Length: 314
Image 1 (cartoon, rainbow, N blue to C red):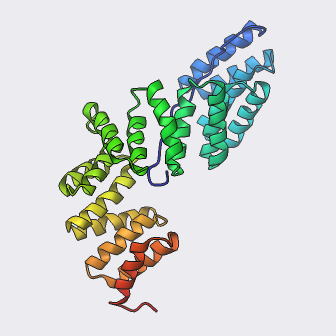
Image 2: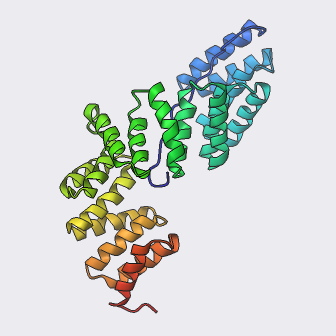
Image 3: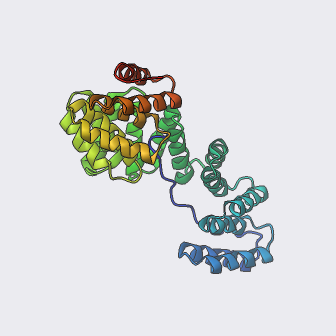
């Protein structure tokens, strides 16, 4: 979801799930390496995993764990090589497929990441990490029906995942199900009153119902969140503009444009606020930018026409 980034969950640390046919030394080195990896002792963990592979070169788990070491270091090329080697050694290695998806997603290969997550789930549907990643990835790609389908299952597997429950409400909202969205959001907020995604959902619904002050309270509370803050600020600017707080709306929209020049929504709100403030040239420029990014924005075209009535549009 471009306007509501999700978070990748913590990675699964792998230990030997079955030692049959493996040298006990290989199993022991892998297990101790996994503990070291969990503690952040990357050099020691790496050495242990290599020792495990010296005892048994086709042992897929230390190979996958070396991928996690590389991922922790930010070496995506090496991480991908190790994880692909692990699933080549063991095609039914669900955790390795899931973590390969993490690497691919961090590389910007969303389609391949989704396939890797789906492969992990086809092997082990009970894995929470790959299902969560797949749901959030679908949402970031604005595939809200697919995200909703995964989230409905995820909240059964992980009922305490507040972010997932909030995102489910957001998907309901984007799919045109306001009643379900409100029910999801209110259920989250009953136990977690500061849950940011749920507050965004409730804020949007309050704005639609004309409760602008309530909407502002919800959206301001969510605006500081590192995950949904940008989305909340954009919605907040739009509500402030409707409420007549033009200077505040302009200030927030200007900050959003500076932080994300390719955000057509921020450009549109900035254009609308500038027009209301009598800044026709700024409104013209922002509306043009919004239309370049999203030619179908009818309101941006209306703002541009209104701005051109007040200033030159050569």
